[in-house]
Length: 101
Length: 164
Image (cartoon, each protein chain N blue to C red):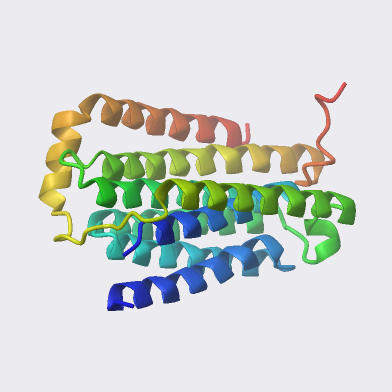
């Protein structure tokens, strides 16, 4: 298999994630788009691990680390979203502008 | 075209469509379910790239845990349905389309220039034992750091989300 195939697929998923982060107003949707971007990075790590025939499997190990960090990120992110919803009755990120000067 | 490439193409089309629908769907619950499609096809691609353990971790953690967590978030925030409330203005969406398309065009151009002719040589799937040996021999310190991070995230999420 060409190395290019998984890399281009990953680039596509990443771009879809970038579009989602910028185009969505709902904070939960933004978190979903971030998950897409993290997955694109993971595909790159696995593909290069297979391409370089790495003896210590660094690509796969780091993909596992990225999955763990993504789980932590979603947990904290949803806790923050819930807190914002409880205080302000909205999760639209353009209405949460307390820190805007 | 080899069978591997055909399987990859099918998975990539399903996953790409799923990813597109995640960011364009009008219904937020549908978007979460399309995320399952995209993540599951990514797991299939891990299998094709000879990484079965990562593929099953992907299914268990992403499809099993993270999407369920996101669905809980959707239910608890009573997210409304419809393009007007879920999406930004048309102008912002056009900007997002330009940025996303630009990122894709730039990445694809660079990838073709850098790795145009390279091929992945197939070999036996990575044994889980080898992966475990690598984690606990070469990457112990990052592994412990991730453990502490998960604990901190757990405590932080409880502190943030509880009512008192």
